[in-house]
Image 1: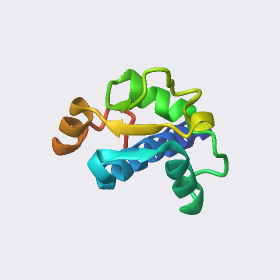
Image 2: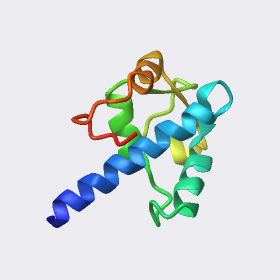
Image 3: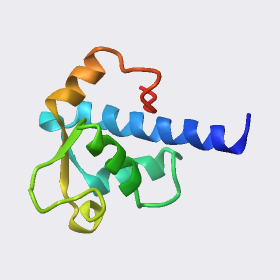
Image 4: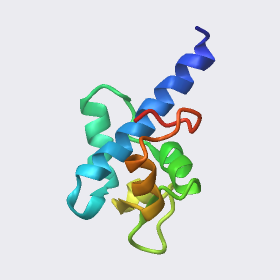
Amino acid sequence: MTEYQKMGEQNAAIRGYILRVLVKGARHCVTVRRISDMLQRDGYTMEPDISTHLDYLYELQYIKFLKQNVTPYNAYALDAVVGLSNKGIRFIENGGDPESGIDL
């Protein structure tokens, strides 16, 4: 397995983890810093910056931010609340898609 493939699998695992955390959150919502702290605690990443993963999920319309001025790249600094969108809930209920880059 190449380094590129390993990185792709790790990114897919992080994105899946984010979605699983949101499923368990109250009203399918959690603060970005809490997600980041959980990812670090569970050994998925050493960095608090998860903006690229949030951007990936946001572009697929699987997540949403509860305030309009929030983007995936300022969400950590603002400690924004992120939630599952209806499309994200359907994605999870359908068991995901192996080609999506998200490992549920």
